[in-house]
Length: 168
Image (cartoon, rainbow, N blue to C red):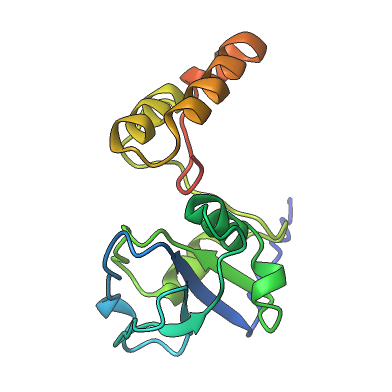
């Protein structure tokens, strides 16, 4: 007889969901699926007039005054700095609407390693993501092409891999 011990996933009590909306380039999406949740939803923004029914608004200055893209990435990638009161967090892009409660998402994806990331749901390759970011003008065209060329030279096989949400 073989006994298998399964370690129970222990999700911290101090958890939140956060997004970053700087540069006033789009409207904030409300997260109505999370309205009955006790998990805080936090939106970092430089828009002093921004109001929300579902997000707690936290005003922040842009780290790089003339570069909202990199300012957004700083906030997005360093929750341990900007959300020190939380032990775990989920970042979602403003374009993402939650289809299930934040508690369910934590239950499904929380990792003991402290870092989890979800594969992109409709981009098939990193190259597809580069091309879409370029098409939508989400970053400087020169920077996009420069980075794409580095990938082509240094690790072209990565361009065919499935991308992850939130990384571009």
